[in-house]
Image (cartoon, rainbow, N blue to C red; front, side, top):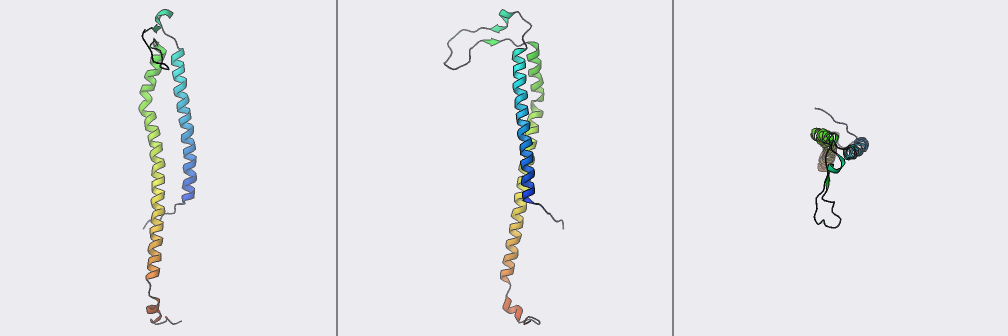
Length: 142
């Protein structure tokens, strides 16, 4: 029979470390998205200045962005395609990290629950022992 020796405090410490690294990764990805967005906005276009923006007229609710849109240049389009191509990988990365953390927590909780169940069964078995019957056995009076 295989035996397990999991130290819940050790697992908790490792999960804190992994969680910290996952937070660092989240910050890095958010920074990447912000920087790529800014790069795309500032890259310019391959059209003359007056044609670089599509001006649309009409009423705009207070606080809403204007209807006018800047034309997308080749650099912005390339950055957009790059992100679209990496979208599935980035999503998969975060999902795998989350699944690993949840798996470790679930496994540790099940281990602890198993220990508590085994301890309860041992205590119940100890309570069920009939001491009087044992005293009547040979060597029981010693």
